Image (cartoon, rainbow, N blue to C red; front, side):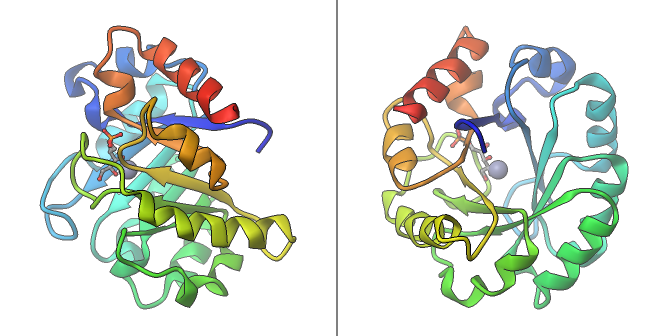
Length: 218
Ligand code: DX5
Ligand code: ZN
């Protein structure tokens, strides 16, 4: 990536006004869409019909973060619908490569996400088949939680592999990113920063995106 990427998470937006909430962060690199199924995580958000409507409502590339069971079955339709990036969880499948292949065949970038307690070592070889690694810096399920700095060891390890040419990946982080935490994440080699409450719980979402990007670039 050319510059620090910012992906506002609409989990913290007003779900009755999603088109306006997307317009409020025009100029963002990706719009992060948290899909939760009340099984993989203890929360329920939205699914394919809402994503299909959002695709018509915004030009910002959609970054769909699927916190769901059985991604082999449910992930490819998000790619077919036109999502730019479709990320699912390593903990939710025995065959992440097959899911990545199906997502890519359906026309989207493929992302692998790991929860804070999941080690990255078993997935380093598999990551060759992915476009994005989404490192969770909170337990998935809810916005507004505190950043877990210990997950940055994973970012540093993967950053080294990307910089040495062994992997080509966007390294993305999700959870607790705000003005206080974005710089340490940037220093660990993160390319793309998801931010929910830090963007949508302010009166100036576009300004929050700009200031996060500026902080990440320093
Ligand atoms: C949490 C979601 C996040 C969430 C982040 O499970 O994956 O994308 O929206 O919210 P903040 O930025 O408030 O921690
Ligand atoms: Zn997310």
